[in-house]
Amino acid sequence: MVDRNDVVGNVFLYEVEAKFREFVMPKVISKDLIASYIRKALRNKVWFLLSPYQRALLKAITLSSIKVVKGKALRELITEILVFIERHTLRGRALWYGLLIALSRYRQVLQDWLLKAESILYLGISYLSNPPIFRYLE
Image (cartoon, rainbow, N blue to C red; front, side, top):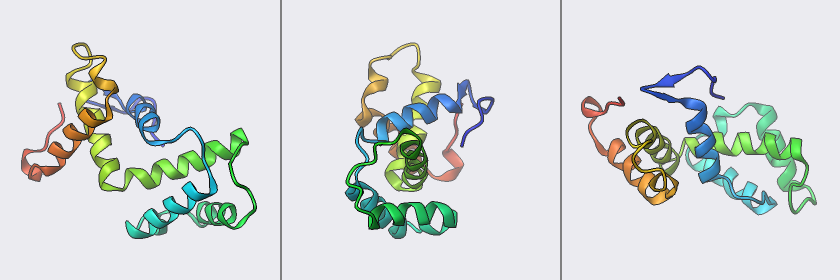
């Protein structure tokens, strides 16, 4: 969870987190989607960073007869967990850094360009491809 007062450069991190959720999360959270995120978490070793309660919640939903998550509170809990898992993947880190760069450098110039996930992903991958010495955020 990001604090509302955290700032990188001239960008508030809650703005980046809101855009990130918008890019990453689908409209419908189904049982199959949660199962795929569990596999992704195990593959990327994020599964063990989750609390036992979060892991139990994901496993309980995959083992239950629920096809689609409809409740607002449950959907928010699961969305928070899935965003955490996605932020630890290569695509998630590239989107996160791409959003940071795009919002800090190009906010006033290219408002419509910010809405394209491909361009954000390009910025993030180019940032992650640089050696750590050359990585900087304004």
